[in-house]
Image (cartoon, rainbow over all chains, first blue to last red; front, side, top):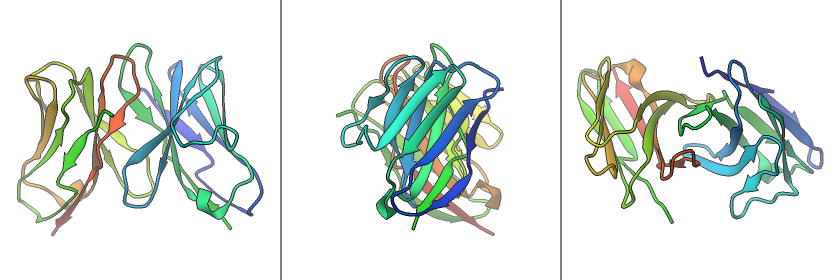
Length: 115
Length: 111
């Protein structure tokens, strides 16, 4: 149980384009999903907390207009990187938590490369 | 700022050796999780500890939660090459709250 999927697994795009990443909880309903960014050989950095039916809460330094998060249902959250630039290239990982628990289950990640 | 310090950052050992990874904070955790991550993949949950003094075992891995719930350790007995990876501790300082991650321990087990 507690499986989280992410799509796509990897994406290469041109600078200036927008990229959407989907995060789905496959066998449970997640009222809260989280989006992280990970640079090579580093730990995870929380970007934002996504709550179903409400606006996402962004961490300090994360531009909400650049990283658009939508959590329209209890099983799906999306992260859109708008007007992507090479510095946005990174490994993006989502997670979902079971209601009333702290444990998070992670998706397999999305490798974004902006040329 | 609620910080979670993880040590060591890097560890390179021979197969068969034992090792311990530490996770420390000055604040009390509601719960703490340990994850293992391989390159290009998402972290995989190993264990969640909730009760002070709790000890959990997962085959050759032993997880301990400090009595005061401010620290935790992961001990691997007789490491194998398949244990190679990035080990992450993550704590929640309030129930249902976001996780704060440690800096990670990159473990390499050589044959």
